[in-house]
Image (tube, rainbow, N blue to C red; front, side):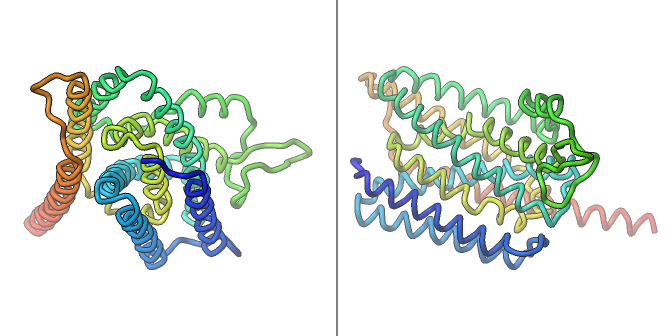
Length: 327
């Protein structure tokens, strides 16, 4: 669809205003822990905002484009939930005080918005010029899905390895032993040093850059429209830090989420390859409509979430029964 420049400006400007209000309300005054009640309100607000945007798309450009937005938004939001689990591990590894965790997440999400915007612009331009990239994206998503299942079965998804950027920051900058409030740099004995706050921000931001390597191809498998790709990513990321605090310990109970995400990535990968073949006039290759994609993605996330919670409850009951027998 052809989106005028003023619509891009209005959407980006509106998102920046909402984020600024979020920042002013949540981060003003002394650092404090983020409550479950606050998180619930903000997550509901951001989901409602995304739903309202989808309705506006429906009224303006029709159900097809709205369906692409909702499919992309649900996919990106689902992938974000899996990312939160890694963020949870990073926070624990760097022992970030709970009162400062929302600031770390905010910086990480702002970095993610900028980096994904660049990725989307490059990806859209590349796909318009080189149509064979759809085969590459499809194969990459299928490969990622297989690796996701393998890593889950081996327990590797709980490991967070330091990337090149993080190792470079550690080697290059002198770092204080502990946190100094929420400051990222501090001067000690006339020498400027960075605090662990900067290190963990780099860890969150660079890790999200790696996550974008599968999330961006995934959404391009659902829509080729850069406007929808960008807005779906932006709305999925905006309420991410509140979702982190809302889910809390629930993240560790979503034991089947990796299987669900692997299935979604595999499905989108196959869809990309089929649509590329269909565009090349291969007669047997079907063109999968967006309503099918939306149904598959939604049903997969519901099933894996419910199955995870059921298993967690059964494990809890089994543990309680075993403890009772020992007593």
